[in-house]
Length: 92
Image 1 (cartoon, rainbow, N blue to C red):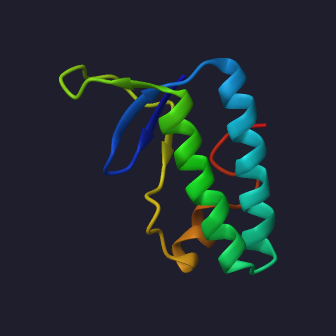
Image 2 (cartoon, rainbow, N blue to C red):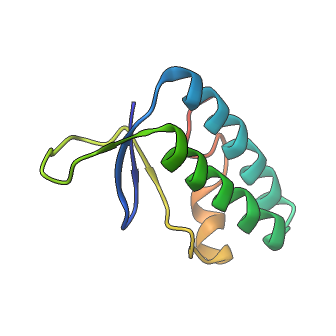
């Protein structure tokens, strides 16, 4: 799966990582629904960190369509409400 972190580039993620990211994504949806902004920030940072650490960076010259687009870490809580709802950005 190809994941783009807005403003930071693309990463190739193995299926096992995607399962882990989906769990974090589901926690983010819950935190946003419960209006827990501070916890949301921590989980979004964790999501991005996991992608960077465990995913394989794709060179900028290599143009690939992204399967999932992850918002930047500085996403506002109000913007998060429009993105992290339902099943989130990762399909269950």
